Length: 166
Image (cartoon, rainbow, N blue to C red; front, top):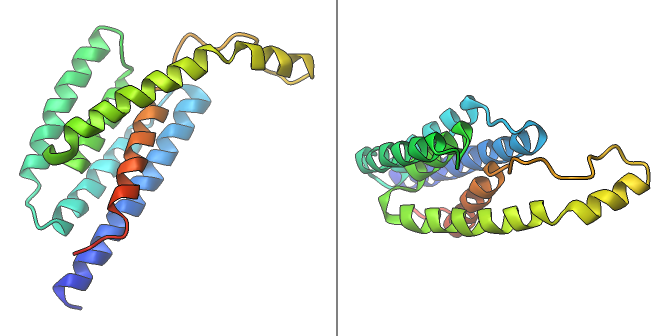
């Protein structure tokens, strides 16, 4: 197998692993407001594969990821973010690297705003579902499953990278 084929296969494997981890994290956050630590670890492992695909050592990717984790920890201490959200966002920033980090954070913010609007305005739909006998709380929970917005931004990144070119 030549280097180009290896790079394409590694890149595809990294994007598939990233996609699976993000979908898992989003579903878990929606279901029980928890993002498994293992999902974030899988994103970081996929980031290592992605750095190999790009022909980079990964140092810059991990550097920006550490900065994102520090910012996320600050947001967690202020009660803005959950701990799982901070870890997943930092892992995703590690994956995309410094060239895409600012764009990713802006996408997360916009998608998070849209998610929050939908979440807060879901009360009428919830009331209708209750009227039809569904076992749904009439008011949405006070927490927002922000992992969904983080995962959506990551999936947009995956779409922009596919198909992988080495």
